Figure: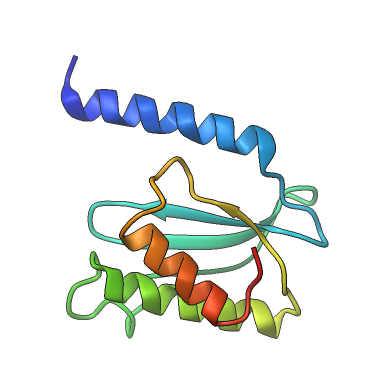
Length: 120
């Protein structure tokens, strides 16, 4: 089997296991992360209503200008999502790392969001 396909199968298996336990409620929505090779995407989701409350990514013009695929850009996305969550009155979230290891860009984004005022 192709190595990249095997990595995706394993990540999806981890992702399903995480999603069994992590559920976004109106009082504590889910902070979901997706990391592609080039960009980072993050959403705060209320799973009960099935709605995205706010989102941020490196595809937004001023965040990922130079190199959107590094930890510095992920940190900027974490700051942005924390400020947008504050505007909506969201203080606590359930962290959903999407099957990715808590390392590198995922860790940088999470720590920046915590520094910005989100609790998880």
